[in-house]
Length: 292
Image 1: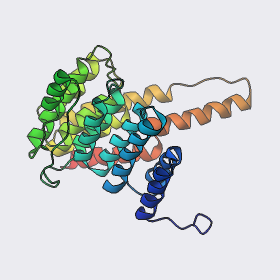
Image 2: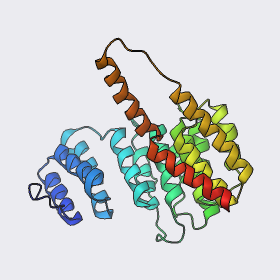
Image 3: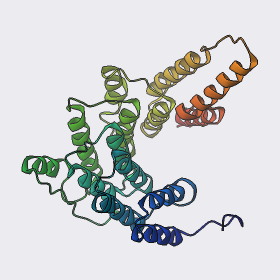
């Protein structure tokens, strides 16, 4: 199929993953899953179920548990699929393993799932939060109630509780990506009250740099609320960011060093979101905001 440039259908990927699991080829199952989600299709409920089964196989057959990256990958896929129910299930499954603790990537991906969730469009579903630790179980039953939130205000209230929980953990690492996903949850769910506080205060409190992804999310808030003054403030922050990045110039002893630096700069532009294409999108968003 590859030689003929044919894209396998989603059920074919699911069958391949299933056969890998049945034959105890767990590494190949994960390789197939990664190829599917990165190049071809968004995972569906069948695929997620298979990969959770793969996690169980890793423990039953090989005697070790899936690592945190595995769970983070699954939750991130749920966020892109707008499947909050599945993301909560995976989070609940994760916290049952006492040797694994959710990190900033886990909460970042989970909050993106809350941001993308559309209340009322997913069936009401119970989440399994049982653990061997009664205190831990009780805590997570509060953080992740057994039913999905049905209103936007409930979505944000649940996200607020999760962020506050992680923020209070001694080993927590508050990052730009985490704060941006938290901000985006409020904006996508149209709960405006805390948006400026998150953008202005929380980023400063945790000494996190605002990146173009942050500016794009915040300009969306300005667009939705018709806040021209706030848009100009965000735009000034964005222009200062670009000036700082463009001012970062170096002298080189050889052409090879310059080429190496150029490649690194291009990668930085892509990862941080300030390529020319990204900049054009923000210009259009700013223009649209001011035109409202």
